[in-house]
Image 1 (spheres, one colour):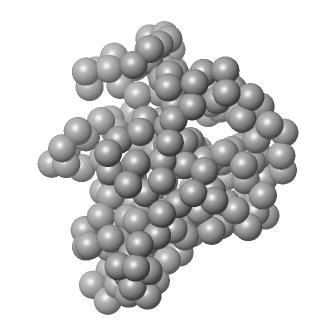
Image 2 (cartoon, one colour; image 1 turned 180 degrees about the horizontal axis):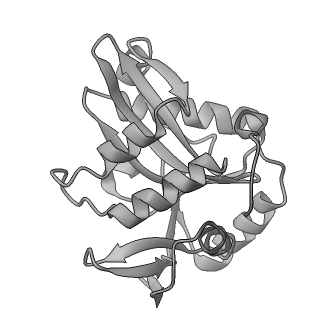
Length: 207
């Protein structure tokens, strides 16, 4: 992919991270050690009217109860589990996003069943922009059910851009597509000019 890493180093203070997202970048450790700032081209996005919900996924939606921001740290811990293939979330990244959650910028969607937390996802919301960071599941379709809930919340709240960073085969099956850098930044600028969905409104400090 063109133009993935645009810088290395720096810090993970809330203001630094928020400024990066507003510029179309996001932090992710490089080789698990060096902090890198990424700006992939093409960029994976999920059009909010393009989520593919199969018949089996609709049935799964009835099996789980979903919530917003009730178990953020448990969700990010599960996403960061080093036993997962491709795990990339370092302790520093986790701590940074927990801080952003406490400040009202980062959010989680959880899917529950009778055995507890079955899956979920987390990301960051700025105006009408949502950056999906990671998702996990412990039971079948639980992360997908969390995504269905997120898309419903974003669409109802007036969000216009759901960024998923890269288009993978799995995400493509859910409706994720790709856009070039210029189109992405046009979409980002338009989304940042929108108000934050009311469901994400919290008391904020800094940023």
